[in-house]
Image (tube, rainbow, N blue to C red; front, side):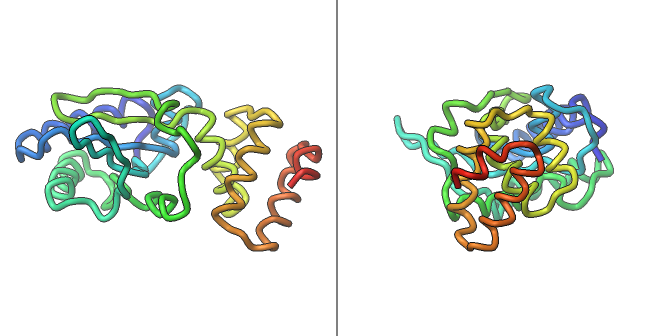
Length: 197
């Protein structure tokens, strides 16, 4: 478990050191979830992992995002060494959220990320607040719990929730999800948004 920002960043510096020792080159990751919220100061809570949505690939002047999972053998090897050194859970570097790439990310997401550099070879692009609202609304409706608390901590406006709701419905097009989403929005005091979707 990571207790907060300092623990998360210590593990990421160690990950950079391991990647450098393996001659893995520059690695860029897009990170969401509790780790990103902690590092950027939106919440202070424990989190069990660093959720990686995508890897950034550069080819000349063009940049593209590719699904994070499964990680390459070098990333897995470096992460496993950090896991052992810091007594972390098996999937502390977690590509699970990468499945969101199957349905598309919010437009211009990379323009809103906040970038941090760890060691010599690791660059982390943390999802900005607007995009975290998208991810957290979808997760709060789907799973509740910490995602609900995180969403409220981000203090979303009605317009941000409407944008996030419309994006969420591209990831689950079922009528059942739409009804649960509308009910959720009403319960958190945004009936005006619920009426529009």
